[in-house]
Length: 391
Image (cartoon, rainbow, N blue to C red; front, side):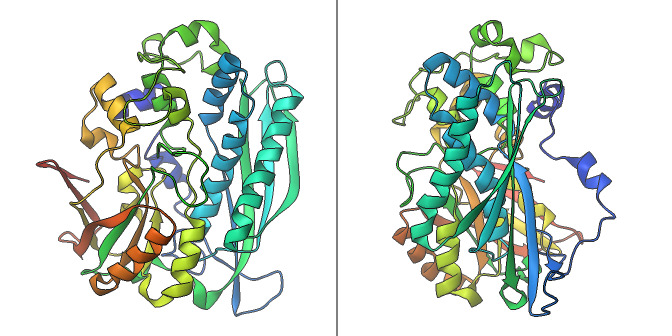
């Protein structure tokens, strides 16, 4: 069984093809090529501005946080879930050019039999903490409250979602339709420790966590915490790994539990600085979330994306590969595999962009380039260690 088959058997989809089919006739907004939907500013009627609103969350990563807390007693792990929930929204909007003056509301669904009030309090504090962390970098986030619902009939443990909104000048919108053949692709590492992070980040983010959780960790957790997974998943796909929460992850200062729970890195301070210093050099940005390294295929017009200089595979992904035997062809559409933000620019502008990344202590490199597609639609070729994969 391939990883994509396993992913579907666990009740999730990395491609979300059925979702994209369901929304194919929805109004694409006033910048159809942008990374997120952009709307006219109907609140003020100002034709120079547009509105952006985005909703997302930490997904099934919160279920692993629950397991980690039960095993260790460490409530602070839920603050990382707040970061995940925020960043999955924040960085999507940053890829459109929105980097300030955000309004944030959160929606928490819990099963009260397993999730006490102290967990909810820690999550709310987590939203406040990450907002305060980003403020010195010029990113203002106003907390607008939210909703905590006791929905034990539909949520087994916990789900943490949030919604953010902002206004943006139309002439500041970053539209991926500007990406052109000849552009280079700059990747920004998802791992390491950026200027605003207090600890090493494994780079895993918040995508593919259903697979990562079950593929990394031992069946002992299935017996101890049956509430942490769906009973509809085939038993041989539930916590079918070898590791324990406290197992050291080789090549990092983290345990396996800490690595898989590393809070999703935000690139918004970096994006804000790049747009301030070099706005004309940013042709487009992609947040490599759902779809991993194949996310770019959804954007641009008749572009053949060629990625032939990717980062070395970070230890957390290498662990999954070595433990479960997945091929790189299967891994790339699920995980970011080392960089979760990519930027498109002229080759002559690359050094300026790379300089800004160094200022924020984020490793960056030219990971590839763009050519004209040969078949009229977008294409992706990934080359790594003498292997080539086409999507």
